[in-house]
Length: 76
Image (cartoon, rainbow, N blue to C red; front, side):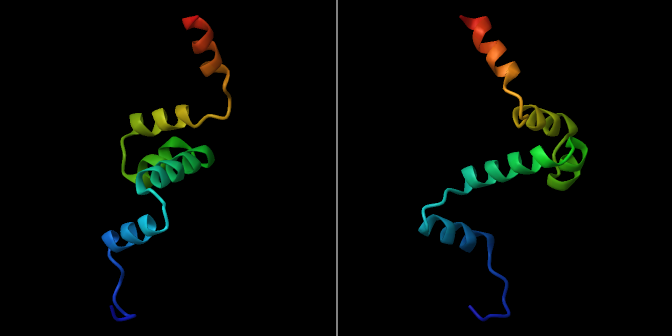
């Protein structure tokens, strides 16, 4: 392709796969990293998702493992 033409999304996906990078896991990691640094309302606008989804992502990305450990102990 000529240098002045933009690369397509599919071409980027193919390049990533050539290097052994899965697109879905890379996307999920990027979202979780963004959610850890930004408030859910910003994530909602930035990624075009609903507020409920953004808050759920923030809950999954929280730094504290206290709720996870409590849930594990409750099932024992």
